Figure (cartoon, protein in one colour):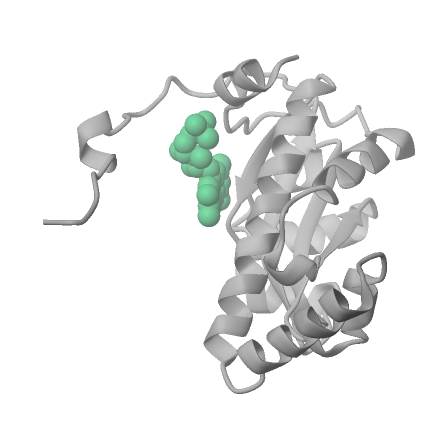
Length: 200
Ligand SMILES: Cc1cc2nc3c(=O)[nH]c(=O)nc-3n(C[C@H](O)[C@H](O)[C@H](O)COP(=O)(O)O)c2cc1C
C-alpha cells in the first residue's frame, strides 16, 4: 500500500474481531516502522508496551470508560515515552556520528532540557506521537485497522507499572475490523487550517 492510500484509508475503527490476535512478527513490524520516526535530538523516547494479557486488558478497559476495542483488538499498544531519556547515556543516540558531533549533540540536549520540564515533556510527547501515527499507518499497510483510545492515563500507568519518569503518550488498538468506521463526522475546510505566514 502506498503512503497516500494508507493515510486516506486509515479510520478509527471501534469493532474488532476478538478472535484475531496479532502474531509476534506483525507486532515487531509495527514497532520496527515506528523506530524509524524522527525524534528530538534522536533521543527515541518511545517505549512500546504491547498488552496481550486478557486480565491486564480488562483492567485497562476500565480506565478507558469500558470501550470494547481495548479487549477486542488484536493487540493493545501503549506508546509510552521516557521523559528523562535525554539524561540516560545520551551518547548512544549518536554513537555512529563523529565524536565532535556526538559531543555537541549531548551538550545540546543537556543544555536544552536540564532546567525545562515543559520542553522535556513536550518533546517526548511529540516524538511519541510520531511513533503512534507511524504504527497506525504501518498497521494499515499490513492489513489491519486501528484506533486511538483515550483513557485515565494515571490509572493506566499504575496498571502497567509505568516508571515515574515516563508518560503514556497514546493508547492504540490494532486489529481485524469487524465493522467499518462511522462516516467521517465532519472535516474543517482547508482554509480553516492552512495559514500563510502568520496568524492575523
Ligand atoms: C487523543 C485522541 C483520543 C481519542 N480517543 C478516542 C476514544 O477514546 N475512542 C475512540 O473510539 N476514538 C478516539 N479517538 C479517535 C477520534 O475520535 C477520531 O480520530 C476522529 O473522530 C476522526 O476519525 P478518524 O480517525 O476515523 O478519521 C481519539 C483520537 C485522538 C487523537
